Every structure is written in structure tokens, then in C-alpha cells.
Image (cartoon, rainbow, N blue to C red; front, side, top):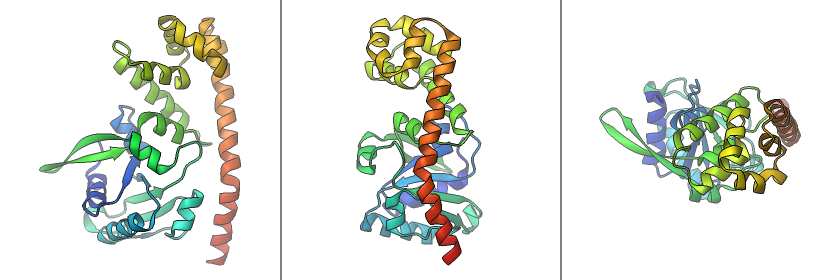
Length: 250
């Protein structure tokens, strides 16, 4: 269950017309892979009008920027996260992290077209919350952080167990691209051998799954993870240098 303070933050975003997508741990909850998180992670369109609306929502939440960078379009467009801390009584202490650009994830207008919408109860009313589509959430989770990789695995397991009896072709292709549980990837290869053959050249873990070797699948998955984590470290290196510069000169 998403805590009520986060409901109120999302309601404030909607009330002020912010074009935003919920992501992070709270989005994982909605997709059936619970993650303990007291923060709200939000992707936004970084254009002048939408950022003006976001600023109005932030003021309504009595929130202020915490850490660096400052709340400016240029930093969002370069891939930084802007961190806010809420002080309004009903959301006091809640952190809201806002991003516009992420490594390995499409531009916001594309994400917006693919978004999913969930209905959430808020006290005596309900709101429709726009959320990153599951494949985009998975890509956004491919970071250098240890905690994100078990979550990707749980997201895919939840998707598989929810839909394996009535999958769409798009969902099957998604499983072959992203499943991180060796036994399920092997099961998927046996159940959908034509799709497995078609995707094996693009993913070594699928090739190992066709052979039914769980240990080989696990090794390939570990190599995938190491490559993604290295790419994420390389992506963030110049951004971290910029943050350090801002800390020293602010």
C-alpha cells in the first residue's frame, strides 16, 4: 500500500496540472513487487510551462530543495535529480525526487505515451495516477545500486505469474528480454520455443535457457548485471563531478 502522504503529493501534482509519472519504489508497489520506500520518485516533462506548474505544486506542499542541484531546467535536462523535502503538516518530512532524463530510458514524451494509469484511493476520494510503463520502470531500475536488481527480478516474476496463462505477444517478448529468474526463463523457453529462438541471438541468457542449464543462465544474467552497472557508473561519473563542483561553490 502506498502511504497517504505520497497520495497527497500525487494529488497536489494533479491539482496543479503537472505532467508527471510516478516511478521508483512506489511504482513497484503498484506493479505487485513491494518495496519499502518513504520517498516519492517522479519523472516530469522539463519544459517551461510544466516546470512552472511543478513549482506551484512544490510551493503548495511547502517543500524546498535539499542538497544540490538547484531546481533549474538545465540540471533536469542533463540527467540530474532534484531533491525536495516537504514541510506541510500532512506530508512533513517526505522527500520528493524529480527527474526528467534517465540512462537507458526514452525521452519523457515517449514515456508519457506508453504510461500506465492506476486508480488509488485517497481518503474519501480516488485519483488516477500516471506511472511509468513496466518495461520503462525496469530500464530505469538498471542502476549501479545493489537494491535495484532484486527489485527488477521481483517485477518480472510478478508480471510472469500474473499473465503466463494468458500472455500477449508483447508480454512474452518482454519476458525474454528481461526475466532474471533462471527457472522461469527456462520455463518460458520451453513454453514459447519459437520466440526463444528468435531472441536468443540478442540475449545470451536466452540461449542458455534453451539448453535448460540453470547455472549457465545465472552466469549470463550476472554478466548482464555487471555490464549495466558499469554503464551506469560511467553515465553518472561526470554528473557526480558536477554535483561536487556545485557543493564546493554553493
